[in-house]
Length: 594
Image (cartoon, rainbow, N blue to C red; front, side):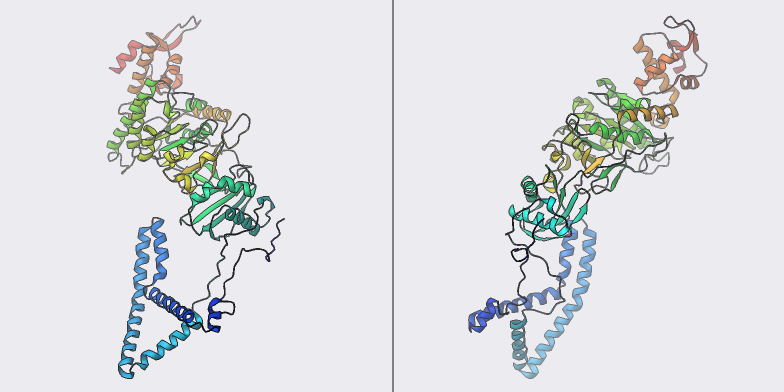
């Protein structure tokens, strides 16, 4: 344990209550009859009295709060407080003017004695007291630039000891401290707000590695966060994993959710959950290999595929995307042609919906329902899209919000070209898992590193060691401070199970108002494309059902028969089958389309 011997500590330095105490320099000057010392002392005190009088007259006590409101982005509240300041200073100014009038009248009637006598009394009062009487204020601790030897945080058992551990480490690294706010104890360690005497949070962040050494913390176990006031910095000292014992991601019945609501997808390091909404909210997700991007995409897709008023699209030019959800995904894009066509269709849908708002009585924005669902498009490996697809994606982001068409972009790294333009334009939700140092300012903005947004200090999974996989920083969606979060996990096997269950229940389809044509006509066009691809003149319904998935239709054989009916349906032998199977000819489909 630490020996807090106050006889040898320079932590607190109590100043004399008055400069005229026996131990003060001014008192010794009076004893030695040093006239000049007394003169300058009295002049200094008169100056203090004058300044305090002016501060009182003009209600200067409001200034600090007004400035803080302006800095924190509340100009309306600042203006209201300025009005209160003017109201408070008005009667004070009247009293000062009345006092000046009384003084002038006294001089007129009684001569200079009316001026000299109060001045003499004021000089005596200033010399003996040093200022106007004020309510007793709480004494603030001040911290010397010298301190005792740093020690391990593991030795701290109380809040005072944890604070002392941090103080010694900061002083040893030349960080000038004004005061501390009360520390908060968590299962994982300590959160200690520090008020700096000079410098900024970025100065503390720059020395984080050295401070971890002094306090014997684990690697990257010190998190630094800026606060509303530039002088304040929040330091979190991590001694164990903040997310031990996290619950599994909650199960949802098919069609039980609504895209209009927020759902918990991550937990904050202080134990609080963050609810996110994907309605009219574009997002960008950056994570290096092993950072947890795929898992988080599954978590978000679990919300959209279980919503009765949402349709989910999946684009991935370099992998299998959200294949685990199977037929719960309405449409997929893997090839260049498929991806571009999906973006073209989505842009057309967004433009058509904008023209339907008044007709459908939806107001300024598309209101999702089962009959008119929202569309959420997941785009993994965005960097691998070709130039044309990237441009289409950005166009969709710019017009999709009003139409309730959201785009979730994901990539292993950020770039300054198209992705940078997308983020700067209208992406409101930014999420970074373990990432490169250079990616942070591109996603979170210049200066974010010094404010505590440090996903570059997270470590991706390596082999069987999960490290910091799933841990992230989130800007937007209600998260404004650089807290550490962790996403609720969902295994691929669980996603497969839920996808099958939801597909069997029946998934919501895009409405005909959005597509601009009847569902039957759009289905007939897709079936003709199936015939063209297969180079067949007749196909069984089971084969049509399978190939229609490439065109965004997840329909069973029965659903196709229910839609198309008996007209044009005929049975034939197929691929050596002993029995005839039901199907449709290309000619009959084309005739119905005409």
